[in-house]
Length: 337
Length: 285
Image 1 (tube, rainbow over the protein chains, first blue to last red):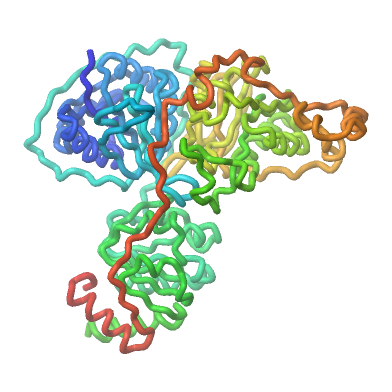
Image 2: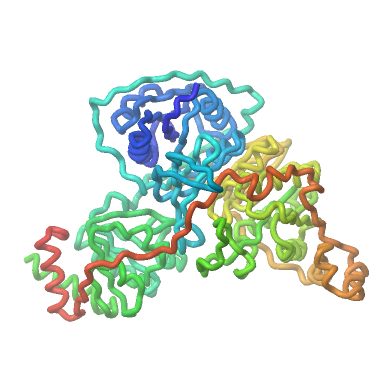
């Protein structure tokens, strides 16, 4: 039965749904509206039925529940088998996955089995037409992603096969506003998982609470390699403290060991869109700027007037951060009085 | 053990002119290196070999010059190497690549563990590992940071997850994708460099005179295997561009939007006016 729906794979661990899955329901429901089809949220797990109302409130029209005790913890083969069976039975036209560790483990396995294309790490998704060798394809999924170190943006299509599949990084798409009055249809699917595909066992799962909340921050002060040392990052923290901001960093600063990786902003780190982004000693690689270019306002502080970051900034201060930041703090304090 | 590796363009410096109209990369225009995490995969295989014995075969798919990374693998300790190279393989996406690699693995024969890097720096897709595992019908464990134990046909590994880690066991055979956290790849052994520096593929031997090539035979007799699509029994329509469902519709260079830009003087007066403006607009409190 071909439903032609737009599907979002809902990732959950111990009944907690990943943010990226809810973000994808936002984008997925937008695509589905364009295509005039329904949005399906697909959730394999062991006790996940109670999560359906939440998925409706974020934009799902249908929730596919696939419960089995062997799906209590994510392991590749039972999850892949369940998804492949669901896709074959209901034939959606699009399936989206978060580009999480789980999504990047699962989606290629499914794509290989059903022999369809898969585009990793999309930063945008659109519907449009495509012509190749005089053949026209209507309403194809444009899978847009940066490639080759962020130097180019490629639009990928898989026009022949269905479903069209893509993974999307966390923080890139916006969640719908929650609408608790939304209702939908629950479809219960019974997975068939033979014993011989249970080949992995998760012995232990340890996850630390996120200490750095870049995504939720209104103001972010980020330091780059220009900060010069781990000790000098104290200046960044001082400014962040006084402004009530979160501390971010460029990949170069993380690689240099100035600050842990969970602070990294950019394509390989966290994508952010705060009210104010202050980039200190960051020259502005494409991969960094891709992760913060949607900030409402950007202040760049850099001693090199030619630094690319100034092209993206609303305000630029050319100067040594050791001079500029203490002055900024001093002036701010005096104005607050 | 089988290790799957890839020669990749150095992605720091790619211009539009290195792309073909089909949207695939013209690798000949870029400096080529051993994909970093594939070195970690090779190292993990060599460590397992040091501890438990066995044989390490390295396979790569790519243009003739990808033989460079096979020689590098020999220098570090690989027992055998295979280059999959054929015009028919060109332009392959991850699905067509994993199809060819899985057939090459089958031709190599029995294995307990396949290792590859988590992802290649040119595509960052991390798809070829899982897709090859699927085509071979073997289990997979991705993002492996550490091999904890290997006994009774079972392997226990630590893999990274968002903000933490997981300890996972798998029965053999299994395909592991290995992260840069796993190890520090060993340098080439001087002895092995001497032994294998003239290891060449049949394509390369054509370009040298007989004396040089025969010198190779005198040293070790080692030749790099070169397999085309017929050698591995691959159906041409499932290889390369024709076996790839994904196509590149268009490529754009990244262009930054112009913004209203204010140059703020670093003086006290300059900074004061900036802060006042931000406060007035309630951007900062």
